Length: 307
Length: 211
Image 1: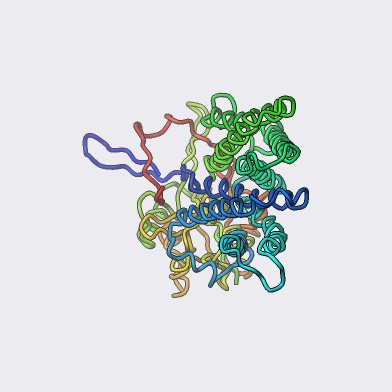
Image 2: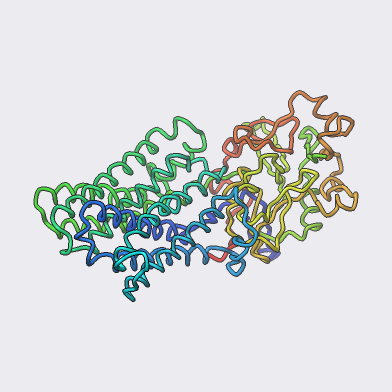
């Protein structure tokens, strides 16, 4: 909707035009970004359990707490993005199961509930009747939480797939991007959390995950950037926003460099130098850059006129 | 019964009577629309002409908005209309993201999604939609698509160039056009460069949201 004030009459002329603004803005970026870190940390904790459980000792409690906090950030921004946040309960009492939003809300709630149980158990050192120690119970629950983390990570891709109007968001590309965002930010976060508690071997392992996630995500973005326009008129127009002098071109490349290119280079250098500072910098850049990358990809398809 | 719309663009003269009737009937707030008559100027001076296309919800048989709505606020009613329950809507804007026709908006007053309902409340009282009544040239043809004797069915049978918007999306719209060109139906075929508008110094009003 646009309007113009005519000086002579002081009248406002209101014109009906295609709705031009983005409806899902940075609240939704925060949602996706925080969820990636929250579920990514669970994936990494599970990998650590399978790879070298002796290094889990000092990491269970801080990792589950950070993941729990990030998941609550995700839920908070999900709620804040609703135009009627006090009606959120409708999603549980009037669920519509064809909607990825509904499925995701239910799974995320169960996921966060389990995380809460795990965090309380570790803090209170509760013993479960079926196991000898709290850590044993924690590790048993972790398996199921990791399984649940997969659909919790992917459901946003489902929402994007159901957004029929937004040609740029395609399945299965978005699913892969969501998982890679989780492995990228999860590995980065656990490297920062683990610090000196992690052995060099484990650090190298997570550094490899970080570097490879960045590489694969970057390849997918570049594939879309170069070839996307050849398949769809709408995608071609959307990608103009990140090409040349496009409105989001600078932000797009800041994101690609910060989230993917620089972390890849730093991880490669770490493998030669074994400098923890370099690895920490890669992790921080990856986490920060992921927000920018997600934001650009969220906004640009919404700028297209649909009517 | 499956209700549908057909607009004969040969007849439409762009008077915007339907648009005004819709605004009044449904109390549609400024900065939003349920029905919009799009103007597109085509050709090169002096060989130019202006085309008019009434745009509204397509009440798709395979509606993406109905599918993505997490609380069934958007739902089908028996006559094929995709209706909306504003009391149930949580304002997630999923439907806004899903609708390929840009026909759904967030009402700035109620903070819920809203759109054309083919005037379901009038139909329930055996009245025609407000836009149909207002059209001076009967360019809006409304009726039961399943009834071969209805005006709309006869129109579809009689005209070869019946089209829908964005058929590639697989939404199966219940809204048809006769006499449409790409300029009418494809928003990318009639993109207007910034600064080249009928009015100067155009600014945007904030749209139905709190961001």
